[in-house]
Structures are given as structure tokens and as C-alpha cells.
Image 1 (cartoon, rainbow, N blue to C red):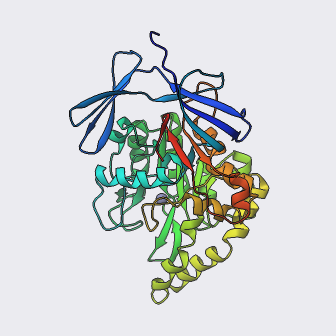
Image 2 (cartoon, rainbow, N blue to C red):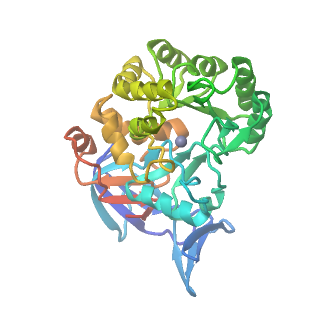
Image 3 (cartoon, rainbow, N blue to C red):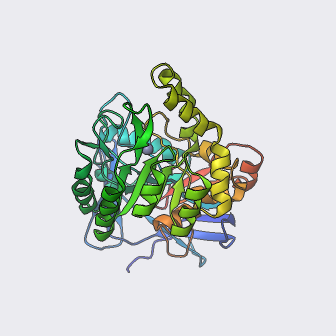
Length: 400
Ligand SMILES: [Zn+2]
């Protein structure tokens, strides 16, 4: 490499979970350049040379994406200090759906910025109506883990959301289609209210599920499934799904199966908190369903505490994009402290979730995505405080 760029950032303090007391961020010398158009910041691959470029209203200046270096770096740098934590992960967050409006890239971009502001550098989006992949080229956007579109049945899910099939047997072909899109995950809606039954009920027969999950795995995709109630879980777990979203109907038996099969769980406690308001308008027409939703709500902390105690890997997710606003990951971390120790709640939103999804922590040579807090975030959370970042660093740049 020609001119070695000086460090961009220098951090000194404490690094979680177990990093050195200081590190530097340097330009990664990778082949990306940047141009700004209509408020967006877009990364474009260039020829493998060492700098990248930003154009804003006619001006051109050199910028870089950054990587972490543990070895001391000479030169001027922005100084950061406090507690550094690997960039947060909202493991269940939708920027490509929005209530009562058609999603657009512009809206998705602004919702994602609300998440970045609280420290989110990775959004795992379990189902989107909008293809948000153009955001991957934008320097100030978090990194995305996508699943294509939700797969559900007609009249058995939120109207207009995802792909809604007419026949249960169509699941296999639709899963194949979504898996071949290559996002690495597929999202199947496992249960929803069945109005003919008046309660939550599975959408798919066990044999169809088993075939569909097999098809996804053969195509190299993992499968996540939305489940609220108890009854859909045995069939989904027998089929081999990789992650349960919500899982409010878990029982000792199905928790044991999650442990045995190494299935992950994203509870979305801030979404479960909405169950009473979902149940309320259904009380007159679907009283069994309404009571069921309230019962799942009432036992939520017991359910997830049992899952954590049994050894289920649990990750933090807000389900923003439906009923929930973006930027609420700190609220989900606070909720998780009701079912696990504070240090685990922070880990579930940071390094453990990153490891699960294949993102590095604050490691030598890793992309510089991290959050800095003034105080130990585990103690802040333990004391019931809200986690407010002093700085959010994304791709080596201070985003907050
Ligand atoms: Zn969701």
C-alpha cells in the first residue's frame, strides 16, 4: 500500500466482553468509494485502490471505512473513551414494512437511522415487503441480515404483508423460491388466529413443514418462524427450524427441544407487551383467542426465564416496524433483564448476537462497528437505567 493513512479513531477505556484497554481504528484500505445523492450516501466498489471518495454537491473528498487495530498507531485521531461494546444487533427489526403506509427506500433509510442512533449496527429483518438491498451500498446504513418476504396463508396473517399462499402445499415451492433468493434465511409464519377455530392455530401440517424446511436447508438457508402459541411449536421443531421468533407459547417440553436441537429464540418482549391491546378488541368475537393472548402475556417472564435457565440461546429483537417504533433496542435489553442477568441481556444484544450471525466483535482487523458508553452498560442496565450511547461507530465513522 502507498501512503499509510493515520488512525481515524483512538479508543481508550474498557472493551467488552474481553478486549484490550485501547484500540485504534484505521482506514481499511479497501476498494470502496462513496458518493452522495439525494440525501443518501452510497458506497461503490472501485478498483481495489486504497481510498474511497465522497461527492457532496460538487465537492469531492476522500473518506475511508475503518477497521480495528490493537497495535498502536501513530498520527492524529479522534479520541474516544469509556466502555466500548461490539455494535448492537436488533435481531428482529423491520425497516421494509410500516403500518398503514407503503414502504419506500427513503422511509426504510430513516427508520434504520433511528436504530443506528441507539447503537444498532446490524439489523436482522425477518421478512420485508420491500427489497432494501440498495441500502447495503450506503455508508451510514447498518448491516442487514435479510429473509426475503414472510410466507403465510391467505387470511391467516396481517393483510398485505408478505407472500400469502392459497394452499398449504404451496409452502414448499415458496420456501424454495425465497431460499434461492440467497439471503441466507427464510421466514415462515408458524401460527396466527384461525377465525374458524377462534384461537391461535398452526398454519401448516407437519409433513409440509418438514419438506419445506428440508428444501430451505438444502438450498443453504436457515429458517426462522413466527410463533405466538403452543400448538405450532412441536411441528416446527420436528421440521428443524433454526430460530423461533416470539415463542411466547414455549413450554418445558418445547424448551427442552430447543436446547436439544440448538434452536435460537428471539422473544421480542417489547412486542409481547402489546398482547393485551391486541386481545382487547377481539374479546367480543374471539374470546378464546383474546384470553389466550392475555395468558401468554401474563406468563411471558416465566416462559423466557425458563428458556434462558435451560440454556436456550436468546437474542434481543424489538419487532420494530409493526406496532413498535424503531430505536427501542435499549427497552428490549431492559425487558430481558427480567429473565436473565444484566450482563447476559447486554450480550444478547451485542457480542453473542454478532457471533450467532457471523459478525466479528471488537477484534484486531475487524470492521470498526462499536458503541461507546460513558459507564459500564451492564451496571447501567442492572440499575434499571436506559442504555444511551455516547458514540456509535459504524464502518469506522462516528455515526453519533
Ligand atoms: Zn416481526
